[in-house]
View 1 (cartoon, rainbow, N blue to C red):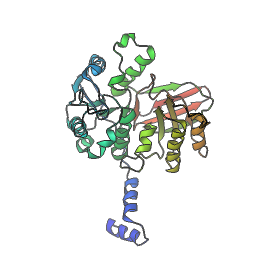
View 2: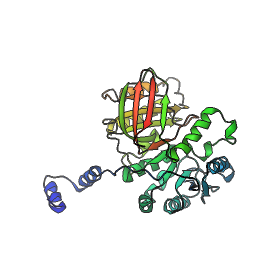
View 3: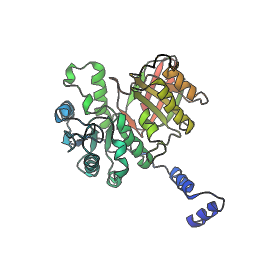
View 4: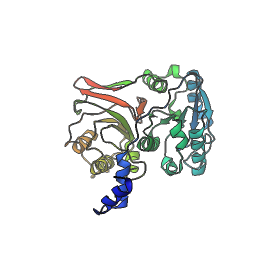
Length: 341
């Protein structure tokens, strides 16, 4: 049956064009692909699609990445400021677009998070990026870009610390910080990644394999119902957040549950949920993060782990979004490792 006759047959059943468009998108998910790994002499661009950062503040990152053998291209938005943003929407869009299109840039590191990606993501043209993929690096607000790229193109990206998290003197930083910064280099150069976490009483044991996706819970919830909404079916989902009330976390996880984003996961990883805001006296929510999560997934059997080293914290390791991983949750601890590297 050709497409015209197929559409006619479905419309005869009362199915609407919007629903058909939705089914069309869902029926053809992009095949996963990984951008070329970096080699000495390759160039990493630095841009600010969200919050602002100064030239001085990016210097520790520049020095460190140059010591790894990479060239650095500093974007026009570094040093710019439009209140909380790294320049106006037009400036941030233009700078990120130029880096997506530039064939001489092999990876793009965002200067910092904050807020702003959702204001420009719909205006970005990914056609050249799709033909010549490159690593997009960052976390927090940059989750919007990870979600959008994964949904439409299936191209891997790197959830990791950004320029504002590099220590002034790596040799003097504590081992945990050194390890997380080195994990960026390891991921970008193609080292198969492996992570471990301590056992937790609330963990739910099991083994799962799937494409790793996720990031900041607030950002994932905020793109729900938009063109950047993620597909979670068969995936290992990781979540983290910072500075929220417990009831807000419950509301956002409830949104994921009600939109059936938790129904068909392969596994669930809960990273750092830090600097939780205190409840108002007499308005205590009365449940922990573990309580909230386990209540939302109690009808499913996939493995779940807590306190994984990812999030707004010192032990925020680089994770390859859009790449196959295996998650093992056991009584003696947690292992997440990259597959097919």
